[in-house]
Length: 228
Length: 203
View 1 (cartoon, helix red, strand yellow):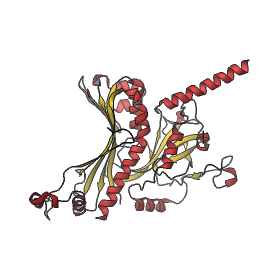
View 2 (tube, helix red, strand yellow):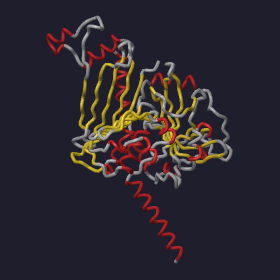
View 3 (cartoon, chains in turn blue, brown):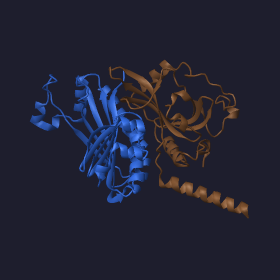
View 4 (cartoon, helix red, strand yellow):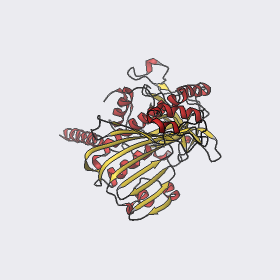
């Protein structure tokens, strides 16, 4: 029995971008994706305000103030390689406000009841008084609980403005309502706008440890959830 | 440069001098990751631990079992790579990652690629010795292989369109390996030394 039903990585950069230049052929011409990947690219939208397209395993979502590169298939390190080449070599002068390395996973618990017990452990209903009583029900269609639970820890090892944010939600991927969606965000922020070239070291050095730490968190919730 | 670094002989095509050494050091210093479900992983390993997936000749190679021929500063272990893992090009949904190694090609002999590998997931893992049939690499990637090339080897569960899940091995050559300032400084230092040596010889 495997307890992870899906996983992915997203590197999100906030700053100032020109979406209209982002195109599979541009990435291919600059060696970031192969000819085969460029040929297989699915173009959703390329516009002055937004560019959305995907190649096998990688999805690009570029807006004027936000650039996200998604990976939902291994090798996730490819996402970091593309990001680093994109902003380190092709667009080194792009100003970035902050960067996030994000990992998500859908984890599977034994059943809805076990997920509910985990939910009650993480967000007890007693402090909610009379409202809390409305959340309780034996019927899973009527029972309530948290829909989103987020926790934030300052990542002082990076900077006072950097943080590790964890969000838990009921998973919409598992039909039997036994799943939990875990999203871990490593947010890097230095309180100043910097050219992309100055961010490369932070992201390259931070990527593997961030993913590893995130998987550690997911492992913790699997163990905690399945022990309830 | 430490013993691990000396094992990683880097090619001109993929000069990545001390970067990986630092990464290795970091990984070795961090705590072990009980990845997903230790019991499940242990069961999987036990279930599939029959023999290496290919016959392997140690002729003219370092035999990890022969201590006298192994660098005393580096413990090398042959990765027991089960035959049940099939290789494929990446791109499908990977629903879970079981193991991941950062690998550096040491040499290519006939149709076999020999590489040093360090686990990205298991912080306590030692430097491991890996041999992979050349045919397991993508035909597009095979010509790129040379000593020093860095690649990731990932063992993962994947889910196919019919819903069935499979254990698969993914090989990803890091063709666009990022460069950081330290890398560039190292290369500049190296070139400066070579230039100095060359000019000294001319005199």
